[in-house]
Image 1: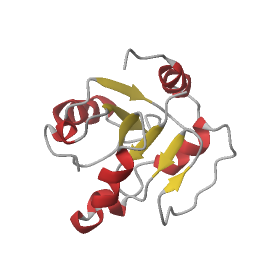
Image 2 (image 1 turned 135 degrees about the vertical axis):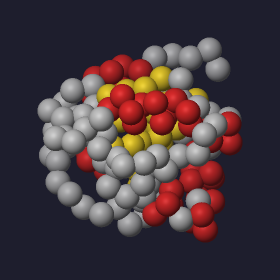
Image 3 (image 1 turned 90 degrees about the horizontal axis):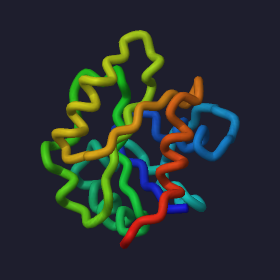
Length: 145
C-alpha cells in the first residue's frame, strides 16, 4: 500500500481521518508532532498554517507516495494557494472531510482544492465511513512509477 501524508490546517480532520482509515476508535486528541505510521503520516495543522513551520512538511512529503491536502467541508476559506501542488514531486490529492456536517459545502471546498492543483478529490466522513474505502482502494492501486 502506498504511504499517504495528510496536510491541512488545524481542525481540518486529519487525525480523525487517520484513525478512521486505520479502523481505530475515533477520539479527539491534538496532534503535537508529525506522526509517522505504517501507511499514513499525520501532521499538525500549525505546520500548514505557519510559514516558519512549513519546512518539515516539505521534507516529510518526500517520505510519502501520495500527498493529501485536507480541508473540512465547512471551511470558510482555503488555506492552500493556487497551484501549490507544483511544489512537490509527488502525486497530490484533495480530501474534503466532514461532508456530513450541518454547514458543509463540499463542492466549494473541492473547487478550492482543484485550484490548488489537485486532480483527484475524495469526499469523506470519518464518522459515517462514507468515502473511506475510496481512499483505501486508491492507496492500494499500483502505479507505473
